Length: 400
Image 1 (cartoon, rainbow, N blue to C red):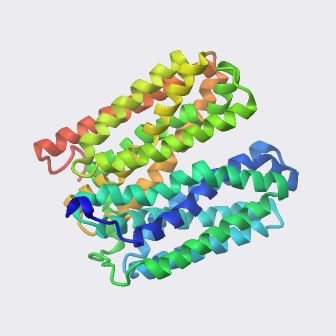
Image 2: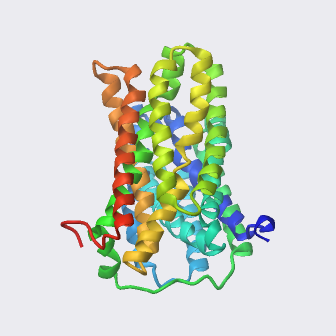
């Protein structure tokens, strides 16, 4: 029977919404010059909208999750998609750059809560041995956005203007809203509802904080390299701009494959899987330091980098839900939302460090092995967490 098990249709509703949210997070990078020209600001200033969106995810997501603990799950997701749609319509119509920043910040709230709550819902819709796979299916929408949504949104923005891109994202959000309304069951359990101060105890729990650090460094470390991937492929590997677009498409396809693989291998024991994934990821990033200046080896390495880049995501989400259920029952949604925040913090750290490295004497060629060091830190923290769970430690020293 297990081999014939079919995933519930509700998961695909979550996947569609994740596609819309994934598209908006990354597409703005491709149309920054268009936004800059529209408001007559520098490209670096235009980049503040990316930063503000990430802050909306990191700050607003966990806070709003804690405040909405008593709201029934299906209505909550519908409200979130309405917020997402309204935020993007407001952004598309913004008549000043300041208003664009505000609406982008608010839109990030929906992102943080949706992925935090959505991941826990996905895990409750399937048997225990399918939980990571279910989370991976939801996050597949996010990875497919990298393959299809971002290139299409960038093209629309360059051809018709950035407002049409945001309008298109709002339309995707509306499709996600309808899918959630039609396919999500109405009897999804909230779980125990805790007071705000009890939910925020996750910020004092060492086991949860350790997973957040694993996420930030293990996942975010790859962005030291990924942020400058196109530049590496052009300046070091010697590919033309047209070829780079195809190579990034290949990378995106590998990401989608890796997300599915990561879900399957993380079902039974996510922390064991994370240790293997991070070890392989650190190795392949180090290898890229040597293959980046040779085209064929670079393509092969790039493909495996893509597979490993998001393979850790399902395991990280499942692991933090498991630990919060074990140590602080009732805080699963808040912990999950905090982990989504940690993903975004990791991206910000990785991109910032990458920029510092590129401007330093080490230069662009050093970004892959610097990435490898970050992932190794995530690996070390994963091993520490594994040992703590193996030894049955009830708390970490200095934290309760």
